[in-house]
Image (cartoon, rainbow, N blue to C red; front, top):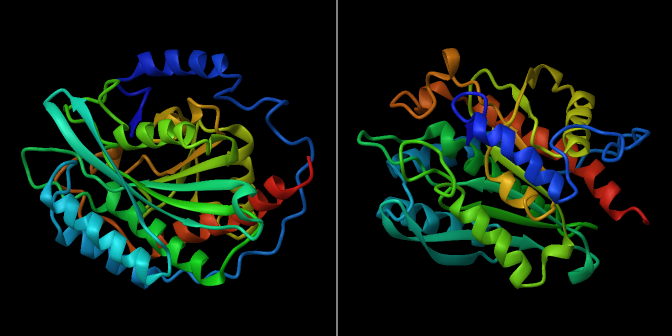
Length: 326
């Protein structure tokens, strides 16, 4: 994930135009924002075990650096599959090859679906985290990026699976290859896994069912504050932010807003309302990001718990919006 205002001004200029071509907008507007805020629905009766999520973060860090195509990422992938199976879900591998600046690389996403009460015709929501770490010439363990979000998504999968089917179906999607292979984030060298999954949604005729994509990224920071990303769909951000305030999580909403390039762009590009839940202010002036300092001691179990509550606070309102008669 990269901020377009810090070295990626070209993306800040080009993406809004691309979204406009899709009939989307990177900024709030009257057409995309509900005219009247709905009454907050009751919270999901889902247990989010922050201690277990922390152990999952420790597990990933113990694998060491986990760049795409590495043996350590494959070990992480197998571990994720085993954990999803233990939660009663059926993990699916989504292998593919892509040409990168360093040659062809083998990637593989992993996802598991929680079916809805209404079956295959019900709306589908994607909950997403990348699980690869950035390639560096030093041992980069990526505790926050992307260990934290992977731990949170895995615990969300367990909790939602435990309560059983709802009116909306969920896909817990762990994407490979979010990080650029080169030092700098420059298209098309990034988002390999999410771009592939977005393309496969159309190939498998699933695109019409997918009504929202929620990306979780860098949510382990001890001083957790979720930013407002300008590329994210306005009504989707407002829905989650409002729900977070109602849940007493307002102090974890940052006043910062900026356009951030992340996996949600892959789904915005095919017309899916998408949201990036991210704290892109990690350490003084973001100094821990993509450095040897992205370690467990910069993260906290409490922040993982807040991130889980943040997502769970917004899902009931999203479910009600998606399940409402059109």
